[in-house]
Every structure is written in C-alpha cells, then in structure tokens.
Length: 264
Image (cartoon, rainbow, N blue to C red):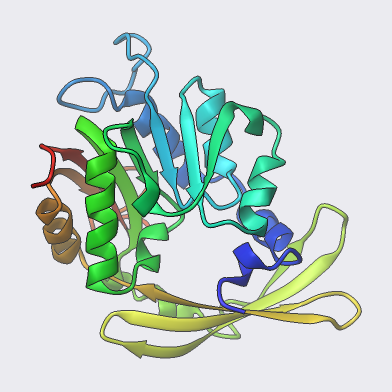
C-alpha cells in the first residue's frame, strides 16, 4: 500500500509509536510562538507580547504537533487527506481545539493564516516541480501579508537513503498495548533526486504489512529558488533543530520564509 502509515488503520498506531514528540516538534512549536514578532524571531515571545497566531498545519498526519500548537493557545487548522491518520488525529486529547479539514492545499481560504508549517518532511511528498510550485502558491495565497512559512526537508548531501536498508534500518516498535512490531526499510530506486522505498512490518503472529513511498530530495539552492518564486523571502535555512548551519546539523534543511505580497 502506498503511504500505508497514514492509510492503513493497522499501521497508523505503528507510525505514532515510532514517531513520538522530538526536537523537530520543539523547533516548530517555538517558531510559531515567536512568529508574529515583526522582522525577526525571538527567544522570549511572551516578554515581547506576541499574540496567538492563526496556524495552518498542512499535512498534519495524526496531529501530534497540531494539538500541541492548539494547547499553546493558537487557533490551529490541521489539513490532511481523509483517512485513518486524520481520524486518529481527531481522537487525540485536545483535538476539539483544532479545526480539522479533509483536503489539500488547494482548498485553503485566502489570507486566513499567519503561520503555515509543513513538518515531518511533508514537503518531500510533492515529488514533481509542478506539484511543489502549486503547493507553495496555495500557501502564499493562504497566508496574510508578512505571514511565515516553515518546513523541513532532508538535505540530499547527507544521503539519508543510503541508511534505509535491511541492516541499518532494522528496528523494533513497541505499541501501547505491549505488542512489538519488527520493521525495516528497503530503497527500491534512486533517480534524479527522487527516492522510492518500502517499509516492511512484521507483527506478532506472523502478519506482515508493507508501505511504499516516494520522496523528492531538493538541495538548499533549489528550495530557496522555489520558495522565492512563490512570493516568499527566505529568512533562514538551518541544518538542524538546534539552528545549526547547513551541513553541520542533523542532515536537515529547515526553511523559514516570509510572504512578501500576494502572488500575481
């Protein structure tokens, strides 16, 4: 199954167990809190009197960060295609504080948000240049003047996919009910910045599941050019969750940009 971690009810709990709160969530939560300070990001937004931000979490998945943003006092909209992942998000404690939307960036209302985030490498799901350009254009339309956009994408220079093999990727995922699921990943193709791979899952009792996916790895220059072409000014590109320089962090490209004006 394609993207089974979000479409297969049996794999959604595995994804949640394997992807708990981490430093990436800390980064985006702090960035959103600081995002409305004019002209820069600050380390103490409370002392600066920052008001709550109208937040869009595009590709919110099972809503781990989405509900945390709402708990911090922000009006939050989580958008994801309909399916088991979004159903799980709606069941999270605190989910009633979030506006959940079944859909894609194409259905976003204009000038409705102050901050938009795409986390957990959702930006890499848009494989073709046209898909990515349309998504960025939708986000530019959905953000008000000066609105902030932040997203993460794996740095192709780190060649993360080379570790997606049955040896290096083998892991055991413990589910909340105590069951242990054995998992590993196999890359099936690499071409022109696009990586195809399959996650394998072995459940107790011998039941097996597979989830295939395709991701685009864009370098810093390509990301900057695409974001700027959509009407944003790139403010920062970090290499990791502690705001390290590119190439000196966690193998990430964490982009923070500001909308300059309405496209067109």
